[in-house]
Length: 79
Image 1 (cartoon, one colour):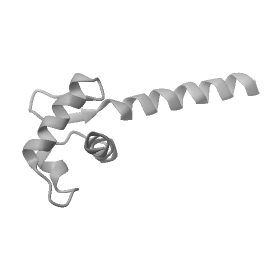
Image 2 (cartoon, rainbow, N blue to C red):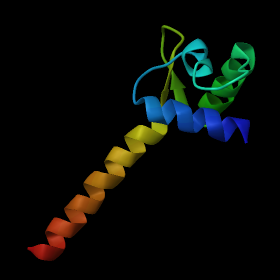
Image 3 (cartoon, one colour):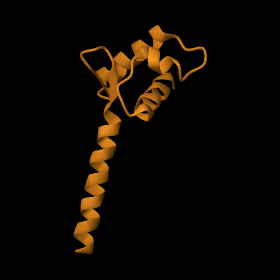
Image 4 (cartoon, rainbow, N blue to C red):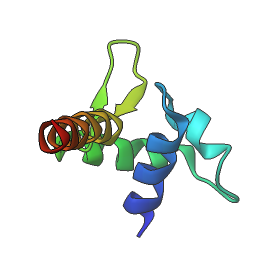
């Protein structure tokens, strides 16, 4: 449940974020716990850690790819 919330918050930012950045989204947030969850999400391929220690959601990229595929399918069907 916590991992899902962190994953959703990271995806909603639409940009790179640190554990401290995401902690601002949650009440009573523990930055160390959020950092652990981000590391876990990265190990599962749900996020990617950047060289500066921030994370980006891989789900945003998937959403864009899925949108492009859906658009291409629609165009192919209409034409």
